Length: 340
Image 1: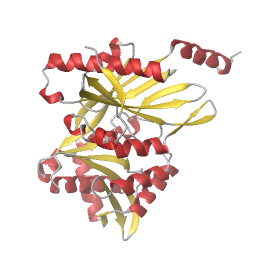
Image 2 (image 1 turned 120 degrees about the horizontal axis):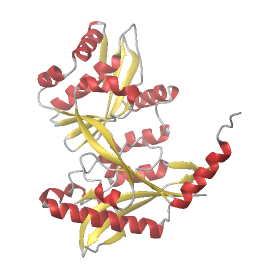
Image 3 (image 1 turned 90 degrees about the vertical axis):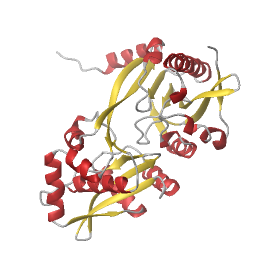
Image 4 (image 1 turned 45 degrees about the horizontal axis):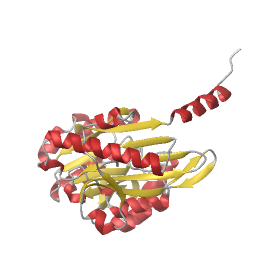
């Protein structure tokens, strides 16, 4: 199946077809993509390189069959990434349009053709030394990348299916329920937050080296997407801010995005109550799913597993140009420790 790849020029042409894919995330929206392009920089061999967004549409004749946003960094070496660097985005990658209406054989052939054409476009237009993509959750076919020579790594996130708050509560691990009740009994409260609270959360994360984007990026996301798509929850003790989280709301799902820095107050973890109240808000406002993003970080595993979300898969795919591997090996040989 021969397809064409073109660069989309306008937000209307891009956003108008996003609803045709079940795997679309808020990170795929034009506004979020352009905000990431504005703020993403990557340090390459001592030089800070800006991201350039390539919003690619894959065409079968005159019909759009897929989308694939890719960011290019051109420096001493060249990188092609999706998502871009330093914007606190776990995944992005390809979207197959009309996925739900396709038979399985059609899905597979179309996806392979899409990936092959985008791979050829990237080679011709960017000539990258390194390619790295994180696919969106539940797009479970990684074979097209593997067949084209990419290394494929499974990744995971947690997704709670929201029914009633009582059912969600019963599904929590008992230690989580105890922690929430203890926080309540000790006077911890949770309220909706604003831009100033987002900056407070950012500063807490920065001090603990738990965030790797700029405050300007987080602030701009808040300004552009609040209140429809961004909600902030803040834990307080007698009016004093303790901790908080920033959630992303899109379609029928609420996602924990950033926040929840490790914090204890008199032996109490306020983050457990913050998450519970944000989940309760999601249930009350008709959302079907709540994602506790990121199940790969072992240091956070013990906390996140207590919500008993369904383990949901996505993929990291990467490929190095052979000559680039030789450069890396040469650098390593020069700097590796010498032992006597």
